[in-house]
Amino acid sequence: MEPLAELEREVVSCRACPRLVEWREQVGQEKRAAYRHEDYWARPVPGFGDPGASLVVVGLAPAAHGANRTGRMFTGDRSGDFLYAALHRAGYASQPESTGRDDGMVLTGAWITAPVRCAPPANKPTTAERDTCRPFLERELDLLPNARVFLALGGFGYQGLATFLGLKPRPPFGHGVEAPLPDGRTILCSYHVSQQNTFTGRLTPAMLDAVLARARELGA
Image (tube, rainbow, N blue to C red; front, side, top):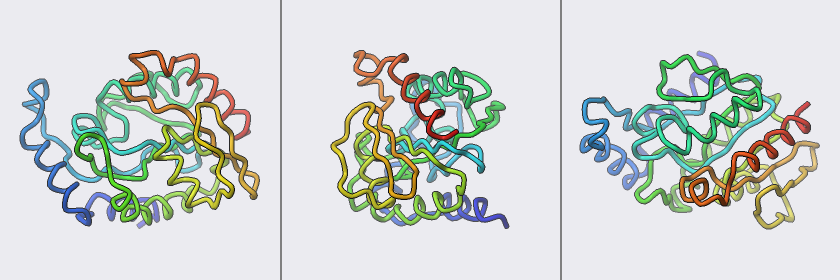
């Protein structure tokens, strides 16, 4: 089995965090009314994209009725709508909408992942849960040899990336912050694509477009 496929198999079968296992499965049983006829994924969500990616997008964790429902990172909710539309404008995504695992979406030059693979209650994983999940992210990044730019969506993903990639000293998180790594790679920061940010204008399409344009420059 190819290493990324083996990693995906291990991710999907993980039951290491009791709180997250209980929550993701509870959500998958109770469902949201709009999706009551759907079969929820209700398992850990693997990374998704191009194994030859130069850009790796690192979020927070699957959304309860988004990726926890569809089984693909940032797929099936408003946050994903915002992100994939931007990736499409930047030339990384084959289409502007990601609705399900069988929708034909193809990423070119980009990979999407998260430091926590299960949907957490209130969208707030604990640092202990992140640390338990950390070996998956470490192995995944090691299996993406062409990655040159790591885009952290939010402070939680930034902290996880900075720890794994050995960023010291670590600049404070902020939108547009660039943190060069000793090996020539770069961590870029963006506010998370959550509705809390996008609906209030804290993160606009133009702001995310600018960060992705910079990622393209750095990854060239």
